[in-house]
Length: 184
Image (tube, rainbow, N blue to C red; front, side, top):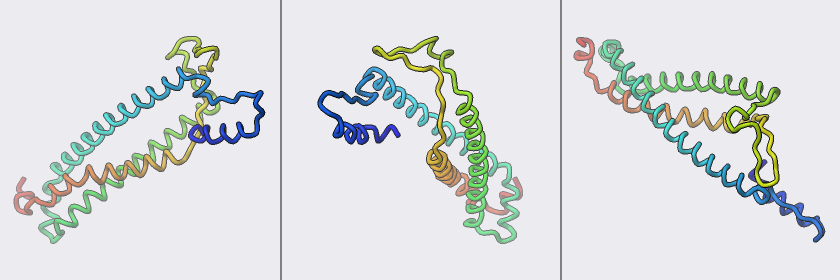
């Protein structure tokens, strides 16, 4: 694992004699290491922008759903469903949609990773025929690996986003009066 490379390098250096030199890939290829850091920062920025767009889209979808179901919500309130239960109903529906869509996305993502694990992913159309840094030539075919933790984090984060996004539409639906909602 990349995060443990300094720890492993230190342990190995203790066993080497003075004649040997051990360097991590970041020490051997500082230009590539800087490029990786810049790429990570750009990906983080794009992820935040995408997250905001997804949240706004989800809130808009939920608000439209509430507006379309105003009469149904009014009838539920007229037969005794409390505003608190209306809120929970909308939040629960949202969580179910978020979980099912996340599971579908995870399955598609796993399928893509499993395919590219066997076949490789050729980066040459994106960076040219070869890539060299200092005296090293890097392969342009990458083979991704599967780590379950990112999928678990995405699922948990999605549920949190869905709940946060559902709160305003749920609150708005619970403030409807039964008579006005049925008339609309």
